[in-house]
Image (cartoon, rainbow, N blue to C red):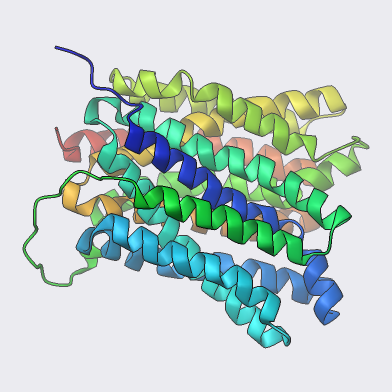
Length: 389
């Protein structure tokens, strides 16, 4: 029997459009603090709260986004949410008072939460089940690349042109993504009888214990985003922004082997190995005394997360029937988003009590604890509830 093909026309287009959506979002994200301060004369605390408001909004809408994606045609949900997502970039330019800008930022969080859930679920629909691990990995790589390249271009535009050019670029890139999605022909899903509105339509209840495992891993990720660059400056490392570039390179490298291993049935061994690597890397990072160790550990942290993100997403999706894939994806993203947010808060508290290196040593200890939890809870629960296709 011939191996099913992963890189079909539709899968390629969905991956490309997902990259463009993320690219437009992150292109504006890193330079937006300058725009807020210049336009509204805010202090750093107010600016941070405005910027972070989208995370709260995205987290709040995740469960409902899963329901929408499962209840209505996924392509239509994606097109509508993406159209509003693009329109909000124009809204930012028209906002002349701070409260209106904040409302647009919150709205962006809502549309981001729905758009990313719909895009990833549409991708899973076109990925052959035997290639799901590999497909999810490469699809996730498009977000990683967008997160790495978008900020660099955004800062370049900000430094050389009026800020409105960032918004114009984001709108143009978003429109290209929308036009690409219009050409996708997703597989026809069997009609599902209207079901009662229950908790299971908004969150994959049986996967909640696995979500707790993911939450711990995402806590460490939030700590990295909040304090890795500041930690580098404390160590007198030049160009600390390269930390995230090295991390992205590690993530990219992992996608060329992790998915294939998942699809061959070794998902548990892969997850446990990645957790071990992540634990050791975090501890080494927290004990770093030189730029060499600082950047080397960032590469291995990238490999760890490059393996764990698609692996855990595959766990969630494989526990859901096709009519609940959107719910599975939104549940996965909800725990990840919540973990990142809590990680930012908790790491700040640890830093105030101890020092920044302690943040990452604690992260390593948390990853070791995650190994024990995976063996005792996640592995058994998954094997009991996974759905064969």
